[in-house]
Length: 326
Image (cartoon, rainbow, N blue to C red):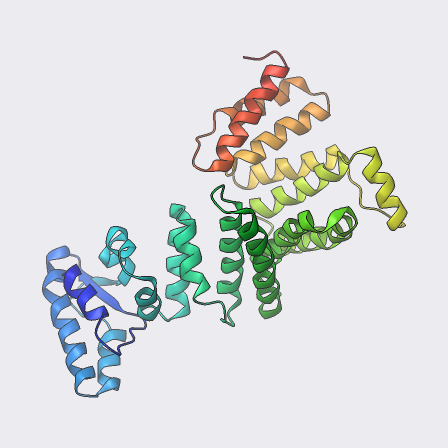
């Protein structure tokens, strides 16, 4: 059945928006029986130039009694999906909600490159939900160790472009505000200390806006804590430079940073290894050894799923060692 689906997807001149199937509670056998009939009917209609009927077959569902709708990705399974060329995938799921569903699936499985390839096909989209996901995908690709220095810079600026466009399309999206702030921060690494300090005001504003729109988003709260920690820890020289350019340079305290990191952990416990690490580091700055050890141990023992988790685990172990803890 999967072979037939792939063969039909390659049918010359066809475009398959919103391809769905209905599966009876009885199981997969019903799908295997009905999918060839559905697809052959659709191809027949398109071949007879009855595009409206062919489209209706594809956009509709098969009524097999009790059942539910599945997307093409769900039906084929991820293994089969990986082998479908990206151009066919994009043609097969033109509907925005299907693209978003597929993008979120790839993000959840850590398929950074495939996610980017999927979304870059939509770089002219006017949909804010797709655009901030494209900004995130561009940024994640830039962060990979395998990405060259030249491409890293290109992707970093590309991510900011998409994030800005996403925000223009939907100012009420907390995710658009969050990723716009993240991307501005990344670009600052290429533009010098003055630009970085100037951008910090904008970054703070958008993190706060993201939290205002969605007070339960642990990532936005964590990032606001990271902003506070960064300026609380700012070296004396950089503080002097900031004072030269700005009458009221950005500033914060470790207590303020701790408040955000703690709130992030309450919103979504153990959601992010770096939040555990930052709690430990902040308690160290506040001379609270007991709590510092507690959170650094949690960071050290956090399951490693990403490159960042590995680095967090390593840093936590080094900090514990410096405190005399094995």
